[in-house]
Image (cartoon, rainbow, N blue to C red; front, side, top):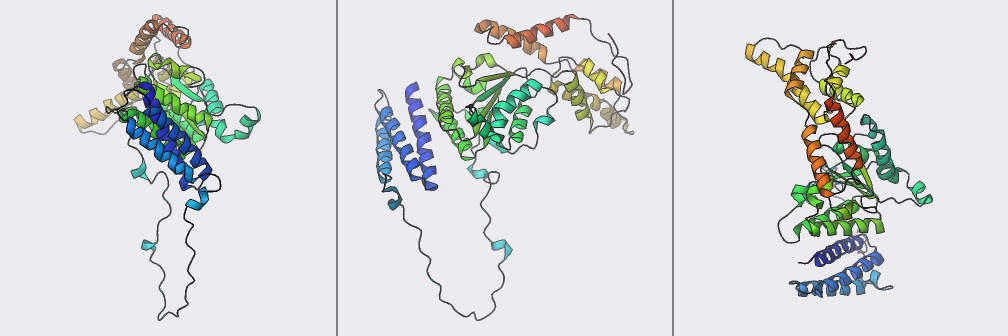
Length: 429
């Protein structure tokens, strides 16, 4: 199937689904519009050469046209059967007292989105995050952009309308792995009190002809029907890379649909390989905001150590600021692994000796750090090579600047930490 054919059929299927939704809500004029647009797209698809399903597409277009005729002005409401009139009840004296209804037999209320598990596609995870942007340590620039693009359109829509600001922009988070991109995405949804739709690309990608593109349409329709929502694409490069032309075109068409009919459904995506994403999606008007999520700074690393150690028996003398100084250029995931390795040392000692477990000491953390180097070094090397190969140095200048800072820091002599106090200043180099 050609690229243009996939796009036409994908858009037509989406409009057909929207038309049925408007029928159920008895918005007949909007249903008629969607049916007419779908009919036109199906007919266009049927005329494309080498379309093996030409007859089926033409038949679908004719069906949409026939349904649209029912909803012509002054006609639409009459074709829907009116609700039945209630039949007057004949009063009958009860022969015995009527017992109260059994609570177990009372019809349940309409299920919420979290309860309709069987209706949720297998490539979507749905949640209402209970984290906010205040829970994200540091990242002031990232939080400002997230607020302006993804939070305030939900909480201050009148302000955006007054200044003619677009409320359907999409944000692409990129940077080294394990640095909190998914956590920031959840915090954005929690801040805007929006449904968080986690799109799992490896479940969405299918090998059958047109299946991936239909799944993309389904995901966007689900987001519209459950607005306000933030649709989050993790590992976006696996779905939107330059080789997946059909999937990219379907994404472009669906994102254009959100801009034409904004329903408070916004898009957030993250990637560790931004150079692999199709340029058509990275340009202004699609993912118009590109946000580099950097490795945690000293303050953030300190907070991560405190959080990871809060549920473990750590000596009070352990200085978390000192540990943060020892783990420069470590990702958040790297630090979590360091804490786990440090706690494993006394844990295994207790298992092998049968004695009482001791607390985790600074020496345990130092041993764990020596066993667990940062994972960012190999990633920086790969990123620099791929950016050079892509010829997009200007596009990723901020990332290349970060890599240069990393190289400069790695060329310096390592910092030796001797202090064990829980307070005070960091030891000097």
